[in-house]
Every structure is written in structure tokens, then in C-alpha cells.
Picture 1 (cartoon, one colour):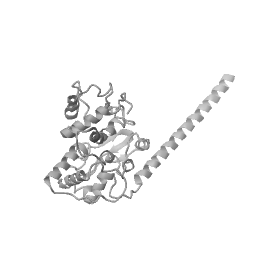
Picture 2: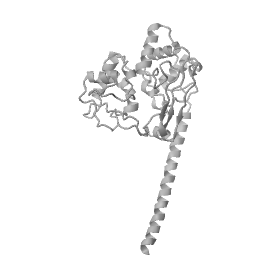
Picture 3: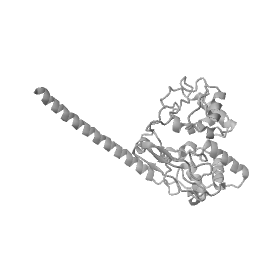
Picture 4: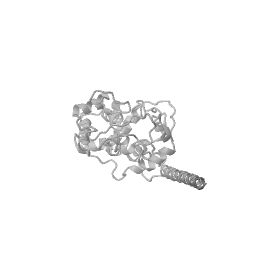
Length: 306
């Protein structure tokens, strides 16, 4: 009899604890989602960057290179090769994202050159709010001349009549953003006083450190890879890019080039298509040497520590 009484009490207690945990989880999710919404709606008092497009062929060519290899917007996984909008990225409970049409037949028509430069440099849209998902913090360091080149390239592209795809941040995406595990609101992650400052392109560790920011969205802040927080089952797991034994410790520069240009690992196995070899393989020799030099000097980390 006493055992039954204790069992009932335990069952009631467990139920209360379970209900309490559910309430706490709901409250946490609501708080994080509200914080995300407030951040996404914040209006930034950053003036447009007073830069104007160029019609010089060399400048436009530089912009094309940047758009395809360094600030890769002209790729299938971003705005598309024609800048008319990219593929839909459905990341399960995190959200659904599609880079929009930025040609003169899309949202590009609404932006002045100065506003487009501000978006690239500071991650701030025409209405003053932050871009979401677009990794502006990865290339906010681009120099004035490179921003001019990018703007000039975008403006040189033909108009594309294509509707924009879906863009929706779900609850888990909002929570992961607030936890810094899947950064979505970009403007708050940019040092706006330092934006635009980087050493001139050269095959150095210093310049490679800026290029290496392009890798951290997938491979983690510490570049050691591992599962992306919140990613749906089946999503490829990024590799370790540090010089640890579980990463690139035994890789030569030629091994690195093979991965970058052919999408193949050191042993010849094909890397998942999530590795954008179509993009980074287009880096020039200076950029490739700089990036490899930086990765060789990154602090070694065991795989999965991100």
C-alpha cells in the first residue's frame, strides 16, 4: 500500500516537473524568438556608402571575379550566375532561404549605387534594417575599390524577369541565431568602424585571415568542422580545416588545391557538393596561397569543436 502511495506521489511529481520543464522551454523559446525579431527589425543609422559604379572593363572584370570567388553572390547557392535569384535552401526547422533577384528587374532596381555599397559593406538594406542570412559579415572587409567593382559588376548584368523565392526564419533558426550558432542577422555582427579595412591582396597569412572568414559559416568559428547546430538529418558534416591530425595536418598545398578546384579530398574521394569548389576554385593564385597559409597557422583543433 505504501509503495502504491509513493508511486502515485512520484508520478504526480514527475508530471509537475515535466510540465514545469515544458513551460520553461516555451518561455526560453519565446524570449529568444522575441529577441531575434527585435534585432531583425532594428533600424541602423548607417549612411549609404558614397561610392558609384564604374563602366571600366577592368573594374567590371574584377567585380565578376569577386562575385564568383571571394564574395560569392554569382553562384547557384546564392543569387545565381545571372543574379536573378538562387536555389531554395530548405534547412528543416531552421528555415527556408532563397537569395533574391538583384538585377534591374528585381530588387536591384530599388537601390542606388550608394545603398548597394552599404548593403555589401555593412549588411544594411535600403530600409535601414539588417540583411538576414546573406553573409555580409564574411566580406565586410572589402576595400572601397573592390566594393566599387562589385557594384559595377552587378549593374552590368542584364535584367532577369524572375520572381523571388521563399525566405522564412523558423523558431529553431531564431534560437540558434541568438545563441550565435547559426548567425542570421548580419549587421550586428559587423564592426562598422572597421568595415572596409584589410591588407592589400597578397599571399600572406594576414590577407588569408580575411579570406578565411568565408569558411567559418560552415566549418565553425574555430574551423574544426563538425555537425552544424540545428541542421536536419542527412545534411553533410563540414570537415576540419585546422592543421590538426583530424584535419589538414598532413595536407600539402597540392592537396589543398585538389579540394579547392576539383572538390576531391586528399585520398581522391569526392567531397560533398556542399563544398563550393565551383566558387573557391576560381580564386586566383594569390588568394589560394593566402588562404592556405592562414589555414596552416590556425590553432589546431580536434574535429567537431567548431
